[in-house]
Image 1 (tube, protein in one colour):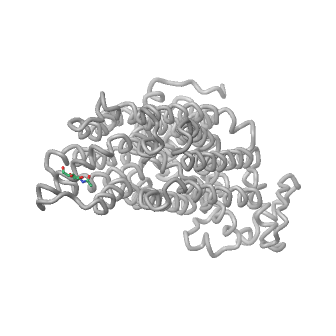
Image 2: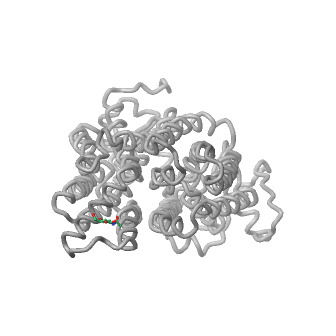
Image 3: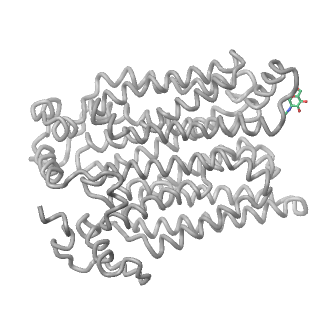
Length: 493
Ligand SMILES: *[C@@H]1O[C@H](CO)[C@@H](O)[C@H](O)[C@H]1NC(C)=O
């Protein structure tokens, strides 16, 4: 059998359709950045009309922060349901039904100005967040499952690429001359239904994931249908199924209880936190207002500049990830971000006395974004999948997703307050956090590139048996590992 998979039209359509979900996820991360001032003015006008007085500025900050951050609450809740929904409905039907959320959420946001209701806007953000929580899990899952092995790595990165492209599109459309104006911002927010409609109309022509049909639903015939080169794939799926049957499903509670999983789950959670608490979303949600504070002349274009750099470095990291190790890249990214955050703080603090510091500030934000995409952006997601085998993986992914969205919420909700409180020194907080995560990664995170799961697990086991809290971090994964090591207590049954 020819191992080079033939790429059919249906396959391309399926990948494209699925990735529209990631695009929409990115769009909704980036979209509220540019029109912040306009929307705030409308909140103010609504308040004035309802209560006969201008909105107190504290209330406005709360309402705006809530509008930004409630998105993550939606995402947190739905990300938690991902495992259940994707098994119950199947990947394809789950994506189809998920689109209803996007449709309702987008419409609520688009109509909120017309109806003079910030409640609608906030509810809309919540619902679109719920869509994004599911989409951010379903897309990589579906694409990974329909992709032939030889293309899986490359196609997997399309998810991240589509997210950053979505952010960039939102930033460009958010220009005041396009849709970021006082009259048109509802259109900007409502445009999120366009990929939804596209996805809904294409999905009926996409096949259900053969892996889902075979492994979860045990339908060999269905799985074979619609797939030409099933020979390889079926053998592989059989192997996967056999492995799954060997391993018991692990619950979330067990993940924390069993010494076998405790180390990897702590690492997974901290990696997710390092992604969100690095302060990157403070940039994506609030860069325009940061640039205004920094005295950059055209803040919206600077935001777009950050979006372009974001895209470019995502592509760069796609090439780096398989060459350099994940651990190295993650540390490089964290270290770079930390330095940029310090420079940014100094530039903001010196702004009054040295006018050209606004350029330094802008450049350091660009550097911050670039280093993010080198490591902390893409790596935490697939690292979780690499640390856990089939049995504990779904529970681990749920825990990781939950921590990610929780941290995302904390930043979305808290940043504006803390920024008002600390002024130019707000990014020092992120610098300290970044330094902490850098040190943690150095001492605790193993390299997984080119290692089989058995080798990774063996390393954790060795350490959990021989003094887990022992600070000499012997990351030597190349030691030959006996199979007994890895199977540990589970091999008894
Ligand atoms: C709200 O609008 C009023 C009048 O249009 C204005 O004076 C006030 O500064 C605005 N408040 C805020 C917090 O923007």
